[in-house]
Length: 148
Ligand code: ZN
Image 1 (cartoon, rainbow, N blue to C red):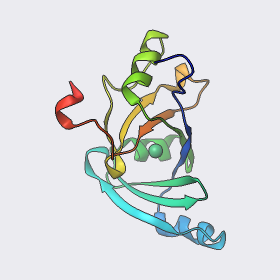
Image 2 (cartoon, helix red, strand yellow):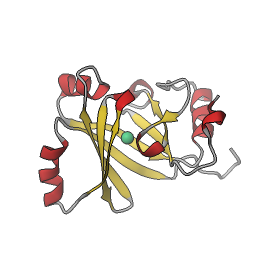
Image 3 (cartoon, rainbow, N blue to C red):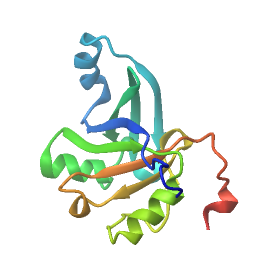
Image 4 (tube, rainbow, N blue to C red):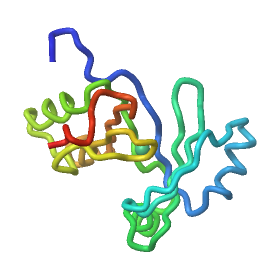
């Protein structure tokens, strides 16, 4: 990172665990929000609906299998806010900085998430009880070969 570069560019989205996207949409439609895209992420056992909310988004997470992290979250805590996602233009730099700061990341390296974004998570233990997601948009210079 160069001095003055900002690692985090914005609040990208808020992730909300729901038992049913359809049921949750009754509330969000009443607020005038619509689903931009709906996608299944099989390796996470989750169906994801993205709602555009001005410059930011709301991500509804519905479990598709009983052992998915979202199913376990619903069991433990019930529906509600699951994570806060911060946008970055350089997820590798963010990953490095956080490791250097001694913070606990959930994955050994950034992985592909919904929409092809590169994502990494900061453990709630290292973030005041909040699961923080970092996300870099898909249309970037990283290719699958560069994920070593
Ligand atoms: Zn998310």
